[in-house]
Length: 343
Image 1 (cartoon, rainbow, N blue to C red):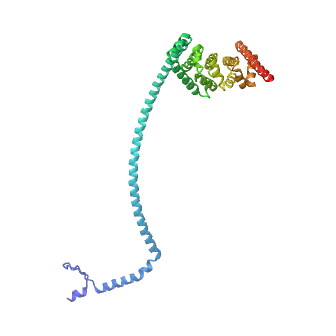
Image 2 (image 1 turned 30 degrees about the horizontal axis):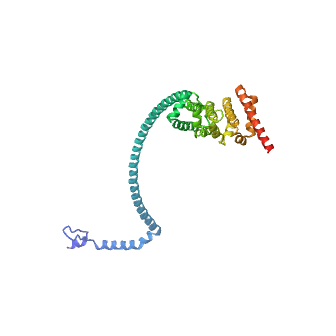
């Protein structure tokens, strides 16, 4: 018993159910003293800065955890967007391939359409050329009038001429004019057919009240100087042939744009255009009933232009026509002056 109490060793009762530990009293007192010292000196060691650092560390740890969570969310979103991007790229590639196929088909269709247009243009040019030749026969024109098909033809012809003139590019009219093209030959044949119809008595009477006359004068005003002179000549011939009729002359003379049109055409630069413009003007000036209307619209510029042609034109027929027209203008003005003096 004495030996056991002197040792006062730390023994563990292996068989004890409560798990008690035997400690020597001296060691227990020493441990108690150390704990009390730690309680006393620990606040002095752990000053305010260290506590603040610990708090910041806890805060940083919390922020880190939140950032990790957000990073995970963003990673999931990135994966989702990447999946969508792959899908869109796949669809885009598919659409690009489809677009290339459609472009190829469009090109092939354009080639086919151009071949059809060329064929139709050639066919239309040839057919209208035959029509132009046929219209030179008075019997043919009379047959057209009797069949009642002339109205629809003139409507189509008017629309075609208007579309042709409106489609011209102002910047390249003079450079790209192709007199041998099917399109040009087609419109020339139309204008020539109209001129031949107007050369027949019943044909000019039919045209005298038709809106085609106004369309022709409008188109002549729109076509730039020096461009498509043969087409202008045929249109002027049609107007001149119509002016032979009393009703046709009245219809043409009532158009207030006639004199400005003729003045513009006299500045065209093509002698054939000048010649047929002067003939149309002569037709108006020679009619007694229309002289007054014509005189009210004449100006000094027109007379001066006719005078220059009468003195300097190289073509004999043009110079002679210009001299006759100048005499008519001067006689008209003198007659008007005498009427004013007697009044």
